[in-house]
Length: 83
Image 1 (spheres, rainbow, N blue to C red):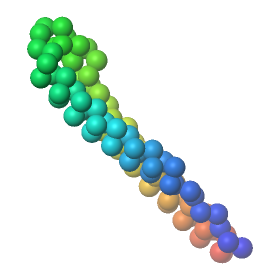
Image 2: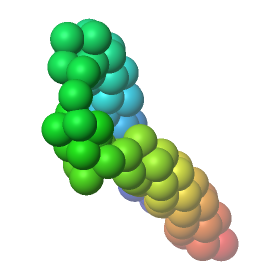
Image 3: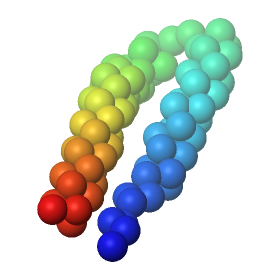
């Protein structure tokens, strides 16, 4: 009996898209900062954007761990069905 394989492509695609979109956002934000140079911009950046990069990095790391766990579980299930 053949064991089912986990389809990880949707999560990998989503993770890649998230990275691409964040890169595009940071480029747009850099251009915006060139024109918006006041205390309100600095406050907006502190209040809303400062933690965005670290939060996305933590999310990406969690998705990597989850993907590894699914692969390991799939491998163990495949091994248990061959016994």
